[in-house]
Length: 280
Image (tube, rainbow, N blue to C red; front, side):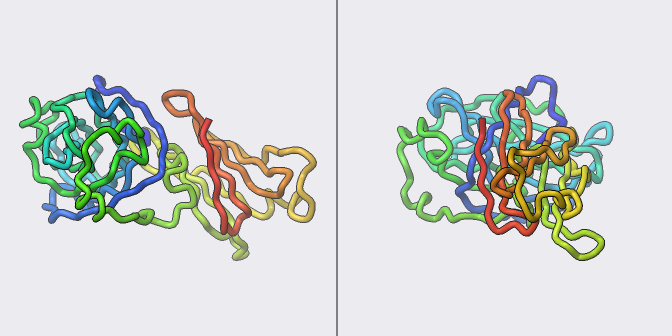
């Protein structure tokens, strides 16, 4: 998702399926409702460089500096060695979600799986590994990097830890979990008459979902009985375009991301029972 990050950070947003489990840590009151609920992507050669996109959520509750609540992420390997770290800040009362945690490298990974930990910090520019870890751990998430990056298969594996990893569920009823939801989120909804609809939210630079538009039976009326002879654009907004396909399905084109890549999400109707997606 779009984030407010320090200027030195590089934003590289890719997408992937999640395998992992969340282990919750007792939180203090500085940051509310912290959770790490998934991994978007793992990049790098997994030997000298690791880049991880983490899905997380929290409510900023403390003014650490100029109205922002600061946090760090630290990625640990299966031996508890800190690999890389990253930092971000979110304005008071708003919600954080998503971060690229590469830029500050600490140590080379020695074993998988990895664990991403969210630290509540007060310092805007922590110094080195110690500074990044100098904050209460308020959420953590353990995952095997191999499904995201085959380069990581070369790392020795702690099979006991990997066997404990379980699939996690989405944080809410979004249709496109890990399918472009760093930029736009699609939710099942109803129109004023109680008919099925889809609500589309834009994710702004502060990682907040802002209602963009609704897709209703009225929008699709010309194609409900007979699909179009060629794909038709029916609605569009910032970073998203909606099409009705010749199959009668609905397609959402989301993006582009920082690398110019698009995510395509295809659902079988306003009452979604099947979702497919691909990236190009």
